[in-house]
Image (cartoon, rainbow, N blue to C red; front, side):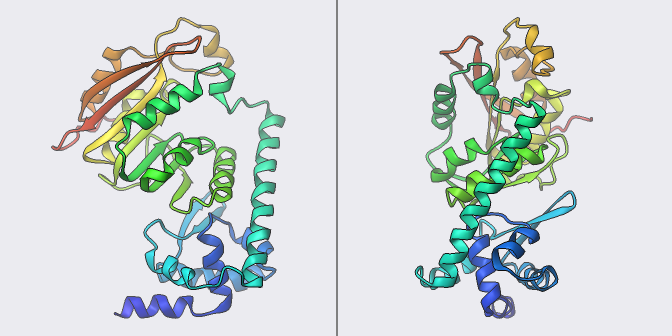
Length: 313
């Protein structure tokens, strides 16, 4: 009862209710929230601290910044917000300002990629069959998924696709620019049960056996050590959990190694089966995805219901 009372007290203040309403629609930094609410950083920081301590918001550090969002399991926060009138002038103005700021963030991130000459849409750059890849991934997932982790989430496209069938989803990526685009995408589509954070795929800051499904789409061919990446993916999957890997099959295009910084010229079934087996998984179906100039495959596996053999790296 004390925890519930603490949460109710934390929410019972106008500015904190506005913060909850904004953070239920997406992740924001303190500087963003200062701009949206027109209040000072010290004042908002105190409010955010109270909301985090009460468990109504979660704080995700990222470099010198931190992002605040209503947790996927924040049922009480959402129940409180459901009682707020949609046509409240102040909340409506906050929503309009948030839409403008999210669009500005996405534009800045896109321009940063263009200035750096980065080819962040690899599927388009390689002329891969994007629709067929997405269809294969969705077909491989169960109709309903509890918690899903997308490693190498990029701009968050997969999170958007799976949002209707997951209870919660988390995307991780090493690139802050990618994550800026992903956060803008999720906020624009009001996918508050999906979140992203910066992380190294070899050392995920996540507990063991935390996710019902783990996906790696077009990630492994960049990995120095694919076996270690798969072992880490298996570690965070629940026993019996699903691992889905979409990547290039052997293609012989040596030019891509230099142009796109690929570390591997595609993977054959035997290599993936060996790495997945060593990671404590039972390989299942392999699907060839047709329609592009470069062969693409989807490999699926289930984590064994015994202990996972974690590779040293």
